[in-house]
Amino acid sequence: MELSRTREFGRAGSLIIYISGAVCSILHLYFLLISPIDPWFFRGMHLVFLSFLCFLLYPGWKKARDRVHPVDYILISMTVIPYFYMIVNFDEWIYRVGVSPTKWDTVISLMFVIAVLEMTRRTTGLALSIIAILFILYGYFGKYLPGLLYHKGYSWPRILTYLFSLDGILGLPIFVSASYVYIFVIFGSFLKASGVGDYFIKFANAMVGWARGGPAKVAVISSSLFGTVSGSSAANVVGTGSFTIPMMKSMGYKPHFAGAVEAVASTGGQIMPPVMGAGAFLMAEILGIPYVKVLLAAILPAVLYYMAVYFMVDFEAAKTGLEGLPKDKLPDRKETLKELYMFAPLAVLVYFLAVQLASIIKAGTMALVSSIIVSWTKRERAMGIKKVIDALAGGAKGAIEMAGTCAAAGIVIGIISQTGVGLKFASILLSVSEKSLALALFLSMVVAIILGMGMPTTAAYAICAAVITTGLIKLGALPIAAHLFVFYFACISAITPPVALAAYAGAAIAKAHPNQVGFTAMKLGAAAFIVPYMFVFNPALILIGTLKDVALVSITSVVGAYALACAMQGYFIGRILPFYFRIPLFASAIFLIKPGLYTDVAGFALLASLALLVKFKSKKDHVRDRSPGRKNNVP
Image 1 (tube, one colour):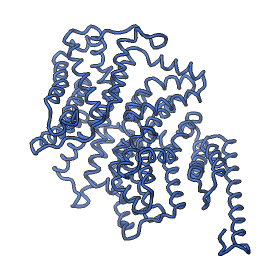
Image 2: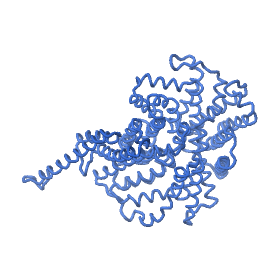
Image 3: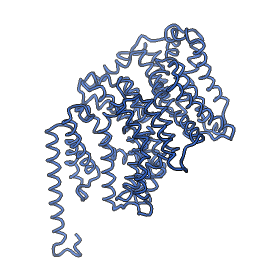
Image 4: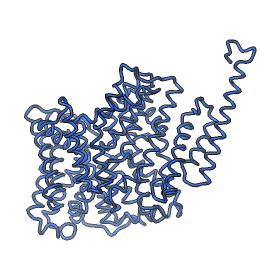
């Protein structure tokens, strides 16, 4: 069971946590920007610092909430001692691990692996830890398994030392966590400290708070802005939902709908450029392409996702007669627009990534610096030395969960690499799908959603990327489309019952039933279940193709998103529709979202025919209602 509530400390304990967090962030920035060190040392330092903070802050069991237990100190030593052992014996260590380790190499590696598994359990729950343990067991017992799952088997010393290496725990996921994610976690902490995060909500209120269903639209816009930096669905729900959900409920939205809107909007933050969370950084590294290419590919699908959600929220408000916020509760629009410079950190980030083609580290650092500069525009939010150190310490705390996730993902990927089971999974996928890309995509969707239900998006995506995407690529999917496909479903597992973490977080704040929130969120996020299939079969949706193809698919898919919202909400051109109208509306949406001339023509024709039919029916009903014999013109 996940223990999300951290310990409370006295002044001395809090000071240790505070100083450790600030030093951790300063060292990361120093080694990333000024004086790089060997990857073994840097990634190990990343884990040692964050595991130290984890075992102090996160209790291992309920009765250990009140104080740091001796077990916690033992676990801290189980990461610190192996790290220094590796440094002292480095010249021999790098040649022995996974090949011919000594007895002490094995003991040291076992200590480190156990500590990492416990760190993962405390931060993300049992599911990911159990999966990592199963993979470790597979590394040893695979020699006893039949068929495609068989491998020659490895000894425990070779398995454990291989995991304590750049091929295992200190591998690609931890590299992404230490180098890229950490920068953006600190960036998010600086956005909050500088007042930019609050401005996102203020801006959304000023722009759409007055419109029908205004509070829900504020949730959609503010959560998309904040979520693209936070990269965590549940964290975003808690961060912005504590404000938006009560606001929606006060304006008449049902609790389960309010919780669902926030869950869907927050989940979309992970697929929304310019940051997209840790998974997108990992994707760029796996594919060996510039990060900006991942961002460009994700733009149109993310726009479709949020447009569909926005339309659904609007239609729900229209159906139930919900108005916007009163003017006295809204920020002044002119005054708000005068502070548009508060978007400067995001603009700087996009500029350095897309225009300057700078490294992710440089772009994130420049955006971080710009958030400090932006804070100086008003005395009450100006960041001095104290606030900067606070933000650095807060960034370290915010990175703990991601470090545990990436370390466990490294265990899984290490075993996959050592045993070669990834290619075997690809063979299984090819054989089960009978060389049908559509069936393979469906099976991949199911696997990604199931994995994502029990673990963070980054870990679910990392495993899927290692065992599924190879098969999809062999069946004809473009590499970036295959990776985006599994990444999408790893993300939206957060709103897919029966285990929908973002929906559960929204339900807790809204005081609604989790499953009711989850199924409503699934309906609101319907576009995310459709669009990934479309961009695999026609990459124009991820901006791969001619300018004409991309322009055409942009227009038709936006109209398709509108039609999808109409179908899901049963509301079209100002009228609530009976159920049988929803089916052709849904078909029209699919035709329009799917790129292709014939499907576009069919989608537009069907949508136009439905519009005429609804208008005709509305006119006929109006005449009937006004006919003689109708008391008070009411049927």
